[in-house]
Amino acid sequence: MSVTPAKVAVLASGRGSNLAALLDARARGELPVEFTLVGSDKADAGALRLAEAANIPTLALDPRSYPNRRAFDLDLLARVAASGAELLVLAGFMRVIDGEALRPWEGRIINIHPSLLPKYRGLHTHRRALEAGDAEHGASVHFVTAELDGGPVIAQVRLCIHATDDEQSLAERLLPLEHRLLPAVLSLLAERRLRWKEQAPWLDGKPLTAPLVLTGHGLQHAE
Ligand code: GRF
Image (cartoon, rainbow, N blue to C red):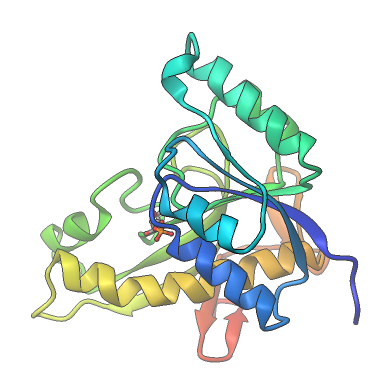
């Protein structure tokens, strides 16, 4: 089925490996999107260099040149809207976005977080999973709300924690799974199969009662 490519902006604060995964998925024809903008709160973010190399417009705004967080967020999201984006992906964007700035984007903005939410919102998720003695770790893609890493979870990928894992090895083993999870979820949104309705994710016209799970065969409903 051919669909009109969804217009997508991406915000990232760092190296941009998740952005690279989105670019690769699009290049393989697996992601029906057109990237309108890659924005960052850090002028030296690797994500901006990747976007430039892919001929995607970029934007770097310095939060320190705004009177407060809300003013920065409102300006940033106004510029994202002006790029023509219908959907917004946070791919390692290390800031909580103000609720008022988010309101026009409700149901159109997703984030990837390296934990099995609702476990370990915020930072140092790999360390916290290890310290808790968890048998499993993973990553989640969720709709963004004003609550830090708190919006409804759309899909997750899981991996077993090995006795030999440390923070670095766990992060290294999880990252390639994140790189499959984010394009898979964005693809559902771009195809308009995934929607936001009644404050929750709906897939193919039905509410998602549990997060989808990424398997070797793609995203599947949880057992
Ligand atoms: C990823 O681990 C992502 O889950 C988290 O921030 C990291 C970003 O990495 N939100 P990258 O910049 O995409 O390489």
